[in-house]
Amino acid sequence: MRYIKDTTISSCNITIKYALSVDFKLVSSRYPVRLTDYYAALIKQPDDAIWKQCMPDLRELEDTSQCPDPLDESALSPVPGLIHRYPDRVVLLVSNRCPVYCRFCMRKRLVGSGDAPIRAAELHAALQYIALHSEIHDVILSGGDPLMLDDASLQTILAGLRAIPHITIIRIGTRVPVTLPSRITPELCALLSRFHPLYINTHFNHPVEITTDATAACSMLADAGIPLGNQTVLLKGVNDSVETMRRLTTGLLAIRVRPYYLHQMDLVQGTAHFRTSVRTGLEIIKGLRGHVSGLAVPHYVIDLPGGKGKVAILPDDVEINGSTLLLRTYTGERATYQDITDLPE
Ligand SMILES: *Cc1c(COP(=O)(O)O)cnc(C)c1O
Ligand code: SF4
Image (cartoon, rainbow, N blue to C red; front, side):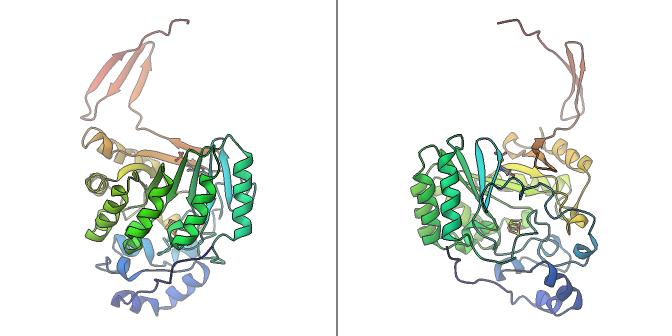
């Protein structure tokens, strides 16, 4: 499989100046840096929400307490590149490259390292495994960013999956609409639409990322009949306020992207400076539910260490007293709700 032609390294002035610094070199020699002109141009000043997401920070090296692979993805990998944690669905890692390397990446241990896309032999082994496991109905292409592969490679992978009768849906997780929207072309959309039902989950973290170009990219995908979801990572100093998250999730609905998950930061080494408390996440969900369209409220999830899976958590607003539920509405008002007793069948 092959990547698209290289798109990296920005000519944006502030980023060039920083790129010459000692800090930059120190951090980037451990955790690779990659940037697009497009994304770097969204930086308005050092240390703003875009800068924090893509520019290396010395604190990445200082955080050595955590594990590089807390979700135990390697242990759940029956063949290289495949993660089989839930019975009916798998993640297939097809690329190690992204347009921009997010400093908070949960696969920080992998992205940019080696940098080769999945090889034909690995793909073959993964497809064989999926074909032999008829309980798998849902395949999620991830990486790295799958859309860093060229159209011919994507065609090969998608055709291989569609040749397996028990595969119902294919999902692609990609940050390309956010960091390299020009990758979304009419040709790519035509290709993807031949493999329906195909879903895309993209990854917007801040309202500033919802630009004219990103909007156009999402429109093309939606017009190709692809349902679009969004996974946001809750990031300290980037999007950890109700106000920012409201603008983000309602802004996404306006471009036909449905907020799907808000992720609590995984306990990945090198990312501690982005971590917020779970209480902060719950306050944000409270600030969304009822105040904005229900479609704009994502599930807040913690991916449990050790590969135990994602758990959705809700603000603690229910107390159970016998068969009476004491609930709190979005305005803070207390309400009671009478539960029923389940009758035997
Ligand atoms: C997140 C994840 C999935 C998909 O989970 P959904 O809740 O269905 O979106 C599947 N496999 C692994 C290993 C995952 O981390
Ligand atoms: S786009 Fe996704 S996989 Fe790539 S660096 Fe960012 S978070 Fe990691």
